[in-house]
Length: 252
Length: 252
Image (cartoon, rainbow over all chains, first blue to last red; front, side, top):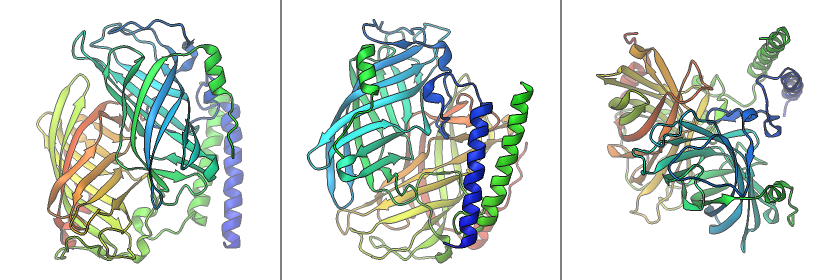
């Protein structure tokens, strides 16, 4: 690496640091929640204002075929993911955990005309593979995972949902941490309530989605996500949510 | 807007300008082609080194079921896209044009073991809609459209291809220019030659892909791409490629 490259690099880092300080002090946009202290560098859709929304926990009743007031849903979540790792093979892993989804306030309760944006603002899933050991999934902090629920064509017809999601898969036994650059598109075309609860119909629309090594993010993909099916379960209690949010110690 | 916000904003802009100048002067990575003078801000996959590749034009022979040396393919392209614009309806538009795809050099000709990265480095498509007028599609300059060809399971079996693509749709009669934040995933599971030519089997894997207004990029989606089918046609001549690359005047 040339000396002039190093100097340029140091100057760039210095300027970036200055920029960070100014952006934190002056605030580009109003921040309304701890999760948003660090602004996403990549936004796959609009950011929801969290200031006017409150967290919803169990017990909480969900009504079918109607649009509730906005809120932040804390829901149990499970998924079955299939990974292909070149040279190692294909691995199917079951995950369980929770996600926290901000859902904006709506001007209508009408199931056929509403328009509703969502952001996933937290996600924790844990799984185990006999080949790969523990796997922890968390939301990628520099990406805004963003989505939308589309209205139904009739009062008893299903609504549809899409959320573009950015995550990190940590595999401590392999010393590997991988992430997606293209969104994992979580979707469900059979939504009968908002939020969907006890609903096993979710899947990710993807084809050989590349996963990149955080230690070498510009390099080739080191793994591919080839299938993901998920179910949104029901509301969890505030205590359960706190326990998911707490850092978990895994064997490294 | 408060005075302190304005000052902060000016300082940020100044620092960003400085950063741009340093990054241009010092060069983060080697640039090897005019298209790469402006570094992509978003990269959906690895960047191919164009320095060792030459442009390929008609006439150029393609052999089935084998991996050719790297090159930059200049191919005719056509597509049929379906858009949904909330409040306006659904529109189907036929496009024709070309794309320029950089394909890295390969260490093997073997159809069952190769590993091949591609970048789309130019794309121009033109279509007309009786409702929306002229539509021009071009590559989004601040995104690196990146993809991969996967080997076949047997010597006469199809290979598979995926390219995450970022584009701008210009609709001058509507005074509208929209772009995608999530990649348009061009894919083909029936690839019998590299590059695929005279191959109508391409489609985009998508579900209600949001398109955003360039004048209001953080706002809600103003349109959705709901279907895209495409065909890679054959090599075009250098003169044809030049004519596609030239700026085209459309009624504004």
